Length: 614
Image 1: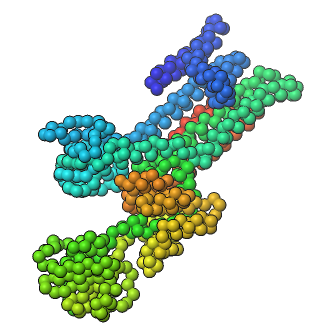
Image 2: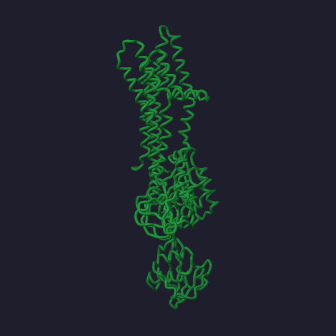
Image 3: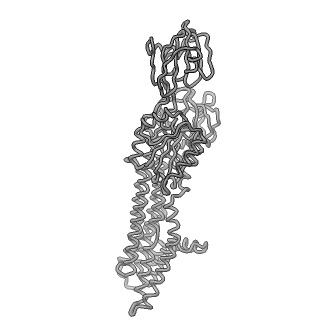
């Protein structure tokens, strides 16, 4: 790029000298213009020639070459050099813009680790992450990037996950916690056992996804490619007709004047502004989304998000945390603490998620010597002796079998009834917890014009209806098996409008068939989940459903920039084309309409990178 800059600068200085000198020899000034032209136009003419030999006749280099050479032929030397000078300046600016965009995204996604400190005996060996094997121990010092996915074996620290998730708050990790490559260790020293080779690590998968996103083009990008294919031959034909017909048909019209108009027509017709700025806008939008922890797998998906009219959510793990917690404790004849303690002790030997939630709610160490005679009854509950008392903890069936009267009111969630020495002692209600921002997410989606929000769940009707009502979801379909969800989605797809899109949001692990069938599959909480990254079109790296509305806003902003550039470029070019044909404006105006508009469009495209204030 530097070499190109110096070449353009030297050509520009010679061009300036040619404009300023007052030559005594009439051949000197054209000669200086020619030298300047050859410096500036040499590579463009060579590329145009090579493209012609390959059968690519009508590209922008051909247009610029014909226009500038034509200007020389009719002795408009300064315009001929100016066309090529400003075209080269525009190309240089374009290269800078693309480089800057790539660098911005590279900075945003600056998660590739340069090395890993591998522990070998008492020594630390600095190695390329590609050479580290599964089972190796790596040491991550304060300020260093985590090079590979693994599990913490020694140490405690806070890690910065913002490059992966967009989340600014650091996360604490300690022995036994999983840790992902791409995070930064903020303080302390961590020893991590490697669980995946570098090629399979989270950082590699994310980088691969972002780097390949530009290969999936949006419809507007495909349209511009097709448009340029037909547009260029048409304007070249019009330029030829403009140069030839008027001098033949209009009395007094000269070939020199109409050829000049025709050359101006060719300069302004170059579709550079559209061809460059539109992919650059989508590139910026995808980069800006990555910065917010939203990975979009291609421009086509970014464009489709703006057309979303129906959003379908899975429940567990998407709108709820997928972690069961004790929501309600209703004792009878004892305190809440006593009832919870008895239930936790009785269930302490079980590994069932319900038992785990009771032990977590109790929050104290279990003294095993207080427990004896534990009998787990499959599908019903547990009978155990705690402090010499018989404790029955289980569902309705267990209480009925033991002929113990129990609370019979309607409850939404999983209920653990407890009896002590054959006497009913109350119940604990256990259910999944709604995510903190789930309600905000639904409101934001409705505010962004989503017409219908639907929830599909395998849970029972009461639980589904309660959560739907709490969050303001329009429709809920409950008690669905995975195959039922696909069928229901097919039905919803048939009911939407022709242009509208349906987005399905799931946790990406159990919902792969539905994610694949939807117009847009969005995987939630995908950090560290290979299945989610593979199955979805859009990947939300955190557990926040509110980021779906953010993704839609980014999509709409990017499309707005794309349409602004299309309208700006086409309207100015059409006006200048007409004025050039009428001989009202000179070739200098044509140069502005080409290069100037391209620079304005590229500058506008840069705004797509900034997605902070949505």
